Length: 175
Image 1 (cartoon, rainbow, N blue to C red):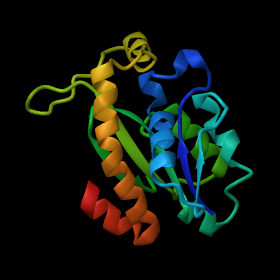
Image 2 (cartoon, one colour):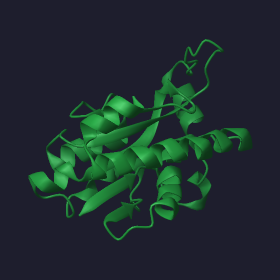
Image 3 (tube, rainbow, N blue to C red):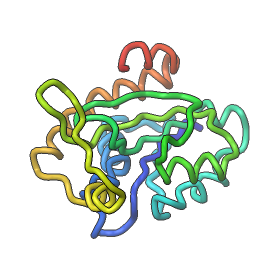
């Protein structure tokens, strides 16, 4: 079973927050990739417990090959994405929860940028833990959501390439 997971927090109060970028994109992808071959999941667990939602679904090496996790990345500028495989959590608690629960880093991730950037593309992320938490739990502006919607086309194509061709091809085309 091919599985695309969008990380975020459940509940109305988190709906359009930056930390819910994975959930937002998976809901768009699900409409665009209306296929029986792909299952889409937005866990009902809070971000820091995301791994609990996947333990019963991911059991074999094949399951790992067919898993794509989409989540927010404060180190990337808004509107950019990066596909990675077999990497650490990079300090992202939702990803750390999945790695711990599955006892493996061997799955694909699509990191979605959420930070503002200078005209030259230099990321301007908040400084300090409180500022970071306030930022990631803050709501997207309408214009920022439009940027995410535009990016969803590229994310959709990347997911199709991953599942129909290979992760290597998707990484070479979309990174």
